[in-house]
Image (tube, rainbow, N blue to C red):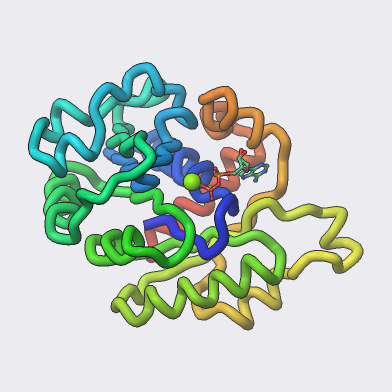
Length: 235
Ligand code: ADP
Ligand code: MG
């Protein structure tokens, strides 16, 4: 599961880029959009016109997984289970979600759950179905403080396989010591930092265009994601 304390740290962007990186490496990957009510991943993958059914249809037993999963344009090994796009959705239960994830685990090498921010009931449901968690933080104290809380909840739920990604680092701010540095984060969080990603307008533009940045191969960003995926495999 991909989690954060604060909203907007870059979880969904990280999810799609990690998913594509793993799929390009030959793994079968499925991304699960758990931003119920405010789904994201279909847009970030350029699949918004294809997401006719969603996880709600499975939870409410109207459709089967095979009907709902969509294949990415960028790699046929990458599939998306779209989230629900309606303002209020309360049909998610721990048991039903866990059984969907178990089913996906039997069919895919990696099941990546993109969570909403914070510590609400949806996170409880995600934790019940996850073997490992990646916390995406930004280099500021509020993000770090919120990540502390998430980390606590994860460890109380028995998720000991945890890692942290520092996203949107700004070289200018780090140079003048106006951002939280890696050393501070690693001393404070109990999760290992497995990657840093700079703040780069190309990453933002790519998500807006529905073409995740790592689709362009052999860039510094794609290589960075390769290394991050190596470390994730070791989790
Ligand atoms: P979350 O899922 O945590 O709410 P998103 O992944 O939707 O966050 O990202 C929020 C915004 O930040 C998006 O516009 C996205 O393009 C942008 N963003 C994420 N990571 C980066 C980055 N490393 N550099 C620049 N923009 C980024
Ligand atoms: Mg998101």
